[in-house]
Length: 163
Image (cartoon, rainbow, N blue to C red; front, side, top):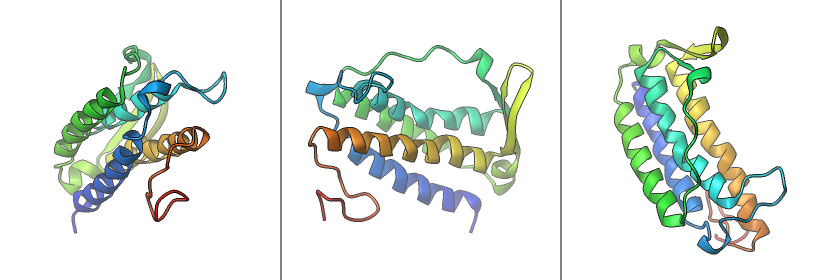
């Protein structure tokens, strides 16, 4: 099996379950946040919807320099906007995964100016910056939903709300 086959299976599973979670974000509570240091519902959901964009930097470049990163966009104004952006970003990222094993095994670096933060194979960088990052913030989003008495969807098995 080619590396991309396993990566696509993981990507499809994680993005589908993430979409189920994002679809629960309540328009009426977009400004809500659990703590002063936390993101709002809108900020967190928007950030999650943008994570698949890392595919371009990882799969089409040899490195990414955080020092030259553009400012982030503002938060989405509705759940529909979050889902639309997420769907477009997922589709674009999925297309970029059509790579050979050699391309996915090539090294990629994250830098901040002259400082190299790390270097790892693209497949590992993709898993870290897209998949694991997505799962991490999806977990945060599940807590936001729970704290607002919004049903948490089943992801890897039944949730307390769905069998």
